Image (cartoon, rainbow, N blue to C red; front, top):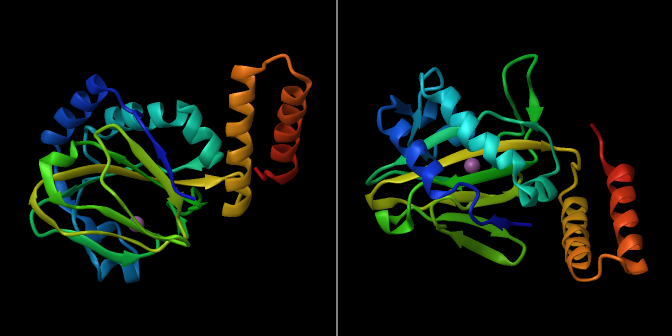
Length: 224
Ligand code: NI
């Protein structure tokens, strides 16, 4: 399941993020890649010890974590500090699946859901699409600044070469309370039905029943 979450960051937040990134020190993205990803990764990432990191994380992760659609789609129990990636002309990231376990010893987590937050507008670069292989074929994404996409970390995906301009994104990984992507998908569909019923028929018995089923399925399936 691939979920597009529009408007995670607003125009003011985007401006703050971009001005923090402008003065940041970027390093070769291969430094943070696993063995196999290293061979196909060609981008730059904000240095993890950059002084801007704390403010950026507060802005990006603080906002993403409060987003109700993200919460319902990812069901996060552990969330990584994001990477801020930059792709300029000639850069790309070939086909790969994300590393299964991330984080430092003692602070490790499993990556279940990968999330990309787009930080600049699609007309500011040529190419640079995020292409995710799904059971319904390849999905190509080049979203508006501030939008995000969440997808299973087990999916094969790549970033097309940027042929001009600059692509800026934040990428992060979530360990979900629901390890199984199919369970996450079913619960997200039920969540959407519940939200719609709560809006249209808040007092109906069916709404209450759907609400209880949703809540109890979360209890049955979640692991913390
Ligand atoms: Ni990836």
